[in-house]
Each structure stands twice: as structure tokens, then as C-alpha cells.
Figure 1 (spheres, rainbow, N blue to C red):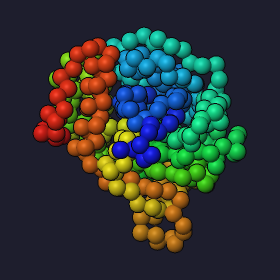
Figure 2: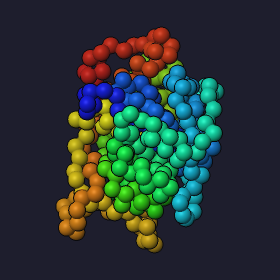
Figure 3: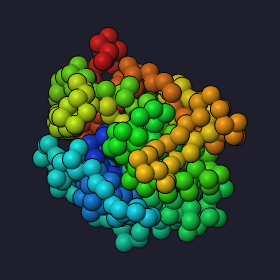
Figure 4: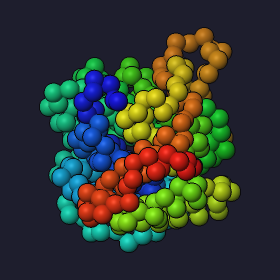
Length: 334
Ligand code: RIB
Ligand code: CA
């Protein structure tokens, strides 16, 4: 069970994006998550496309009530690089998506974040699954919120190699200065890097379980994995795509799914070939105090049971049909 045994209030800052889209479904469906708002950022695609995609995923999930605010169109400094080469021209290529049933709020992402944090009866968890620019901007514009944020848990970086470049994972490459601000902020931080998310592979067996669901939510997720998988085969020679972003939400819902290590983490902002790389001091070679908890090991079978059960439950709730037979999933792990 999640800590304190009642829903964890979160803001999901994301760049949907195929894996962000699954993270949204998981956050909407889980009774242990209270999704107070979504803020969007550039990253997998333009912030305009990410916002349209977020609204469409919320429409698919029957969650048009969740407020969405438009965030950063580019990094705090430096050149804007996008991930359409992985996620397609729309940022969420593959299945036809429902039209949005809601519109973004007038406020900016940082204004909505500030409003939600300031008015919440309990500390808010900030979940970032794209370039962490909006969170950094909030810290820079409103340092008074730092003591009131429960934690930042972000998908980004790696204890090993990168993906967008040999050294840097895409989210941290896209705005390393933003991550540096967050790492230095004093807010409790958890880092979910590629070393963890590459354990969360949407294998053919996993995709078949999505396809076997008797509703559009499961079939849409399967088609997302089809497109995402083709990109991962073509660019990085993966047999199956790593579904990165829902690992952050899953760790909140079922803490036992992830093993963590307290480490000193830095992000390179100046390297000619290493800009955006996260330097994770797993063995305390620098002797510096730890500033983050870094995800090390994932219970992949448990992760996929959680994600697939959530997708099936959401599909059943929005369409009234389900193939959900609790316990059936546990026999045929990924
Ligand atoms: O490198 C993977 C990360 O970059 C994921 O969050 C993916 O959605 C992209 O944003
Ligand atoms: Ca993302």
C-alpha cells in the first residue's frame, strides 16, 4: 500500500509521448494516486502537441476533469531538441485518439503548480516524466514552495549510458540546467533512470495481454506499444520497448516494486560530448553527501501486473467490459 494508506496527491509534469500516456492512465486509475493536475512540457514533441496528446489521453481515460496547464516550449537555456524521431510527428503516433473533452486552463504550468501546492491540505508529490524545466522554473520563481513539496520523483538520467546521446538520457539532455536546479533545491528527490526503466520492457507477451482486453483502452495501449516498439527497434535495436515513465507512478503505488540507493548525483552541463549526462556516485567515490535516491532494481512482473490491471480496470470503467480476471495475469508474467 502507498504510505499513510490514503491517496498520494500528485502533479504529473509530462511530455506525452507513448510512455507518458501509459503513466497518465496508471495515475488516473489508481485509487492510491490523487492526480490533482497535469502540466505539459516540450520533449517528445512540441509542448502544443504534448498538451493536445495529454487532453486526448485524459478523454480516453474518462478523466477530462483533470486540469491541464501548458508549460515550457523549450529548455531554460540552450537549444530545443525534440523526440519526434521516437514518438512520431504527432508525438503519440499509432492509434486514432478521441478528441479532447476539455481544454487547457488559462494559467501557466508553474502558476497551476503553485496554486495546487499552496491550496493542498497535504504535501504534493511532483512527478516529472519529461525534461524537468517546469519544476525548475517553479523552484526559481517561487522558492517558498520548496519546503512544502513532499518530493520530486523524475524519470531521467541513468547510472550508465544515455540514449539520446551515448552519454545522456533524453530528458536530462533536453534541459540539464533544469535538473541541476532541482538537484540543488533541497527537495527530496528520487531518480528513475534508464538503468531501471530498461527493465520495464513491453515484450510481445505484455502487448498480447493488452490486445486481449475487450475495450478500446487496452487496444489503444497495444497500438502505442506497436509504434513505440518499432522506434526502439529502428533506433536502438531493442527487441521490445522500455516503458519508462509509468515506473515513477508504480513506485508511488507499490513501493516494494523498486529497490533504491542513496547517492550523490550530478548532471553535466558543460561537457562537449557529455552535456546532459547524469553522474551517479553509486559507490561514494567522491565522498559527497547523497542528494537523491536512485532506482536500481525493478520487479518487472509486479510492474506489468500493476500497469495491465490499471489499463483493464480503466477500460472496464469507461466501456463497461473487461477481461479482468484477478490472478490470471500472475500466471503468465512478461
Ligand atoms: O529517455 C526516455 C524519456 O524521454 C521518457 O520520459 C520518454 O517519454 C522521453 O520523454
Ligand atoms: Ca516522457
